[in-house]
Amino acid sequence: MSDSIDLNADLGEDESADGIARDVAMMEIVSSCNIACGGHAGSPELAARMLVAALQHKVAPGAHPSYPDRENFGRVSMAIAPDELAASLHAQVRLVLDVADRTGAKITHIKPHGALYNDAQDSEILSRILVDLAKTHQLPLVGMVPSGLRDHARDQNIGFIAEAFVDRRYDKNVRLVPRSQPDAVIADQQERLDQGLALAKGRPIKISGGEELQISADTLCLHSDSNGALKTAQLMRAELERHGIGVGVPKS
Image (cartoon, rainbow, N blue to C red; front, side, top):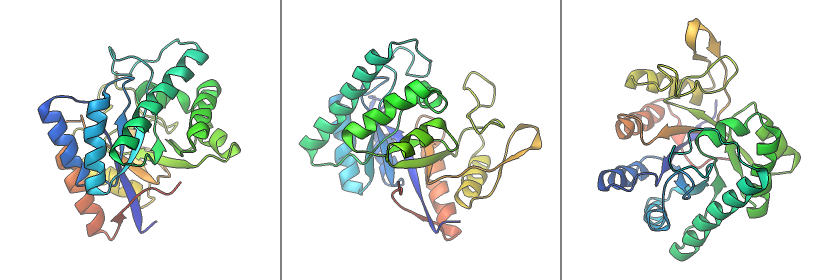
């Protein structure tokens, strides 16, 4: 067990006043964040607000590119030509990098979003596209372990940050249960805390059927759009600290 772990949240995806207020409040709790780049949500203006807040709260900001699919919030796999996808991802990351330059922030990592994140873990084509993206911008990638994405990143000497989820259920293959299935998102606050603490301590988590699963994690993700997300973040940080686990930026 490490004496510290990163807490991250996907932010800049909700342009409503309530969404912005929630995201800024999350910055007071997490140690890193992933900012939407326009592919599934977000805008340069919203990214600027998130980056300014990240600077104020000393949160490490990352780029959060997606399949170019705002209609489905990037949560549906796309049949898209590799060259077209690569061009879109580079444009999305450049958007956030340009905004970061204007605000004085420094982008520290890249975490793909939604269906792209899930698909890339086991797709050689997608993992190569993402590793090339990370290599171009000399930034570490965030993803699952084990995964082809992690293996390809290592082969190319690209930093990799192993991520696990506080509020999502896993299957026996160490993959997230699809959101289309019932109970894919953990709704109960105590269950979220139990899973997050087990992950931080390097202990197995429980999956369906009573089985246990061991998952390595450098960072724990808290989805800002889950019901009760802000409360979960507050309770999760307090629970970690109560067990002597500090919250700090991820190591790649």
